[in-house]
Length: 242
Image (cartoon, rainbow, N blue to C red; front, side, top):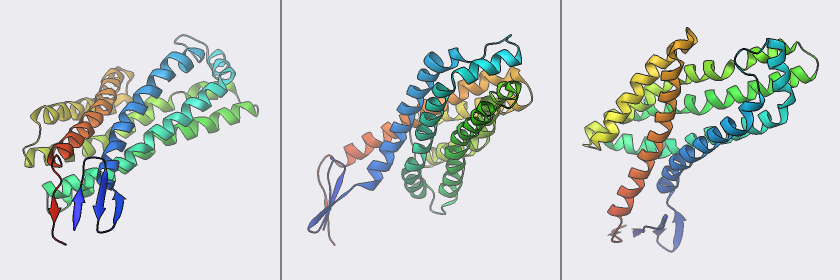
């Protein structure tokens, strides 16, 4: 006999195990909260110490090098926050397999989500390598150039983001899910598609930045909605024959 309660645990027979689906869904909410917190922290505490528009490359590089420790902390926090998305992929896979019995949407979402969880954090790793190189005496103008890894890697991550969000939006459509979540998801896809052009021109960066912010909030809203649905469905404990 299996009982599912609303505390995040599943009772099977004589032992109690964690409700892994609910824990996975919480990772989506944790991803959004941590990403936004780190973004605000970087904007207020770290980036003002670095280069500014109009600075000479040598000046820019020196400013970044002087704030190397702050950048390393920020990069580390971005890595931790980014990989939380991996935990959410379990819930995404489960939900999408219920919506699409072929498993096609789930496969696309998990593959795209894995890339999303890798690209942006790995850019932070590469920036750390650039900081180490500068501390060992490389030309500071190169360090100034390495600051461009942030928008370029974000533009690249927007490509798998399109597939990730579209797969979930299609699943929501198939199951009659929230129309608001579907519409916002489509908006995220459009902004992300435009934002990928940041690799070609800086003119597209505002769309990339807005799309990235909307995506992170959308993931958190989606996770919260799924948690509410689970709580409502488990409002009264149910028992299933073994």
